[in-house]
Image 1 (cartoon, one colour):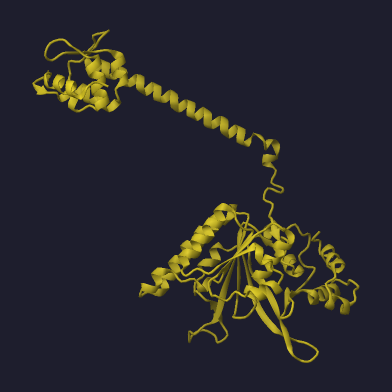
Image 2 (tube, one colour; image 1 turned 30 degrees about the horizontal axis):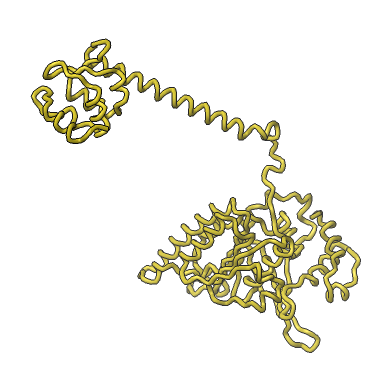
Length: 415
């Protein structure tokens, strides 16, 4: 690089067609240095330029050079500047085309290597998408779903009225994953501040492998869940509940419903995209309330957010209904029976069961015992009677019978 003072003196001494230093002023500093060190002037308005010098300049600076000094010519061929311009531009275009062809060849070869390992099995669709599931511990529910449990990489919605067992069943799914995978960790987002560590332990949850979060705003929930799904931190993520999420904007807005609906649709769309490659089950609980609209039937229930946008992004929707209370020998309430109704199941097409009619109209259910959590012993007895499997009901009601459970699964074709 030459001295700037010398360059300015040299520029000021050059006249190109009556305009002072017009050629150098429109070029970059680097191009000025190249021109200064390579140019030789032949008179007041002629500049002889070597071909190598032109090739060193950028395309923009060459355009400036052409427009500023029409009498510039090539040092070797002495051809007019218009011909030189076309020549150098054509050479540059040919060089760009060669680079594009090389990039296309590289991309083609990388694609070939990427799909080379599939060989003939690339066109065999059998087992193309293998669903990884978490057994729910409720045999009749796994059978009704057709896939053997709660799927990973999908969104599952648990809806129901207050105290119907939504949070309890979500914690039960966490315990089921921990029992199947000793290294699995889970995330429980409590938006209603109702989490009980004692009840979680009763349900069999290992709290040393569960992270609890109680965010203030809905935006914090989406941020936490998005990062968790991207980095594949957890096997199960529970949002309890959807109706408890309050966006910050909603607190200052006069049109509350429009803000909530718009936010909910955008958030679920984002999460549904991220969960596909997360190796995680995203479980969302949602409150059902009685409708206060006068034109609606008295017992009509609707979701707590009054919007069906979540149905577009959930793959499985389960509605939990409290059937009745359970009593002990002293006629004291010691639990409740909860029915599970499948409202939506978009993954039923992946079922490999030969028959789905073995249970007839049997409705999946489970018992919530206040002293020992969720129990499916009564369900095993009912299924054994329905499938004509001999068992001792008193023994099963008091203790879980693994042999009976395996026999029922075998009869249903779930093995």
